[in-house]
Image (tube, rainbow, N blue to C red; front, side, top):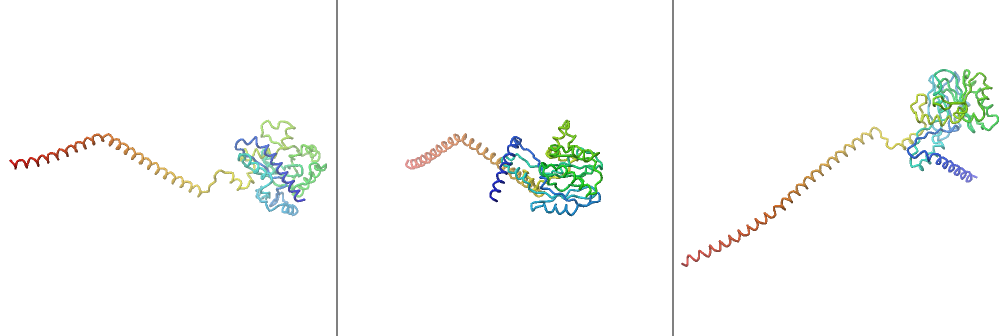
Length: 362
């Protein structure tokens, strides 16, 4: 059975890899940045301190600690009024593993630039559309198998509920969410909710109509942004926007990482970021690089100087050889005259010696 499960998992991973490759291959002709989210089931939120006078229950703490694993890590998110929220998440979720595998088939043109949580991405969208204030907003995010509630006061994130393990195909899903919303509000002693925003699969369940009836007098709408120009321009496009709110928020943050409306957080492991950098040096590395450059410059200058001296010497030798060649005929004449002078001197000596004996005879 274990072997069969392993084979099924391998087959599923291969199919996912193939789908991702076909999807990304046409967009990665050149260097392309990509952002992705950590699955809802692989993130837990543990609130430190209190919100509206209520602290997180021991049951919520126990559930959060129980669901963490050995490959999980933590990120601390500062909240208003000196409180904070600990985000526990899987360091290497399956999406990251698949993207790294796909990257090897795309000539290295895929650059993993941002990893964020689903909940923070939704909060970023709300912050981009909502002015400063103290009104309480509840975000309902519905997936196929999980649902999560996010609470904001003005532009500040104050609370994230535990996961609601109820399938979106369940006929009771909206009723379960409604009870959970009321429970979270009472448990944290929150004031009256001003607005409810729905994202994910909510539009397919007619969630807006359901919650509008249950929470009479509260503004209920699908999550969309008014910062996208002409999109969305009608109710149907708003529903579509809310369904794809998470990827839209991730892409927006990737394009504008310094947007003041976005929470400055990137959960991508530092070692992965360093691996994707062409060169990253510390202070000592830059000093060593500067020294290496200076040494290389001095060596190059010495080599050029030696080559210049060598060329000058070779030129002088060539000129001397040419001068010697031109003077060779003169040298030959001088040698000929020297030889003739030597013969004449010899003849004179011989004639002198002969003439001296002749005078004595006479």
